[in-house]
Length: 346
Image (cartoon, rainbow, N blue to C red; front, side, top):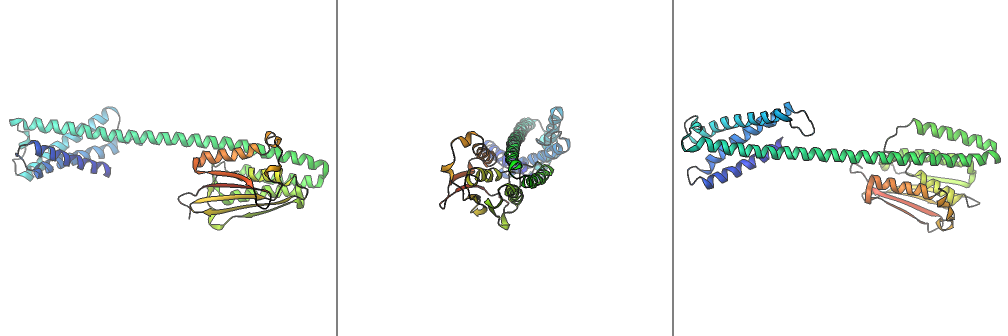
């Protein structure tokens, strides 16, 4: 509303200047400015206050149909009468001198007031409509992003579950007691996952907690062949991230890095700040990316999970996100995620 008032005041100054230049010395700029500001500001106050009371569309804040036309007509009439009275008092002219038809003074004032008020009101209406359309477009884009994220997550969850059940099937034959322990872990993991909210983002600490549960589940099957380290600095615990962002990377490290290695190995997941970006690294001491068979991706083992992570990063952060998968200098594989920290991050 205040922005509308400032814009109206600027228009009034321009009108006063134009009238001074075309009045051939019949009035000073100060007199024209007082008339223009008085008429314009009173009209603005009446119309802007009225639209807040009468509006039937909160996004555009402008009444529809005849109510909008009546509001503008009423505001302009009140502004014209009171503004001219103020101008007459300022210039020392007789009261209601503006109603004199001599010299077309009244008609000129009405035409200028109507033309200017109509133009300014249409300008404000266009601004409100444009803002409303932008908000609707942003809402549609946000809904599309949320739908895509939910779709990707619903694809990831059964993918993880099927892999775990396949591992459990093998363990039932080889070591039934450990299979029972793994089933108990799986039951606890699924209960925690399904009882949680289906939010589009959760704190990074929740992602690490979920990852710890998953690694404990895998530890039941792999025993001492799997060791892991989770490193999350305290100042990064509340950073929002999409759920199930890291688990596909860890699954990839286990299936294609540690499992083919007889002695197993270690997985280290670390989060750190790099300027205004969050960097998360998943390192393993497995056989390395070059040792994986080409058919692995075709089987849905690594290609599916990694591609899902890339798509989810691109959906949330666009071109500002990055994912790299490379051989670690000391052997194994290093997967690195990088994306901007939220503006509210400490």
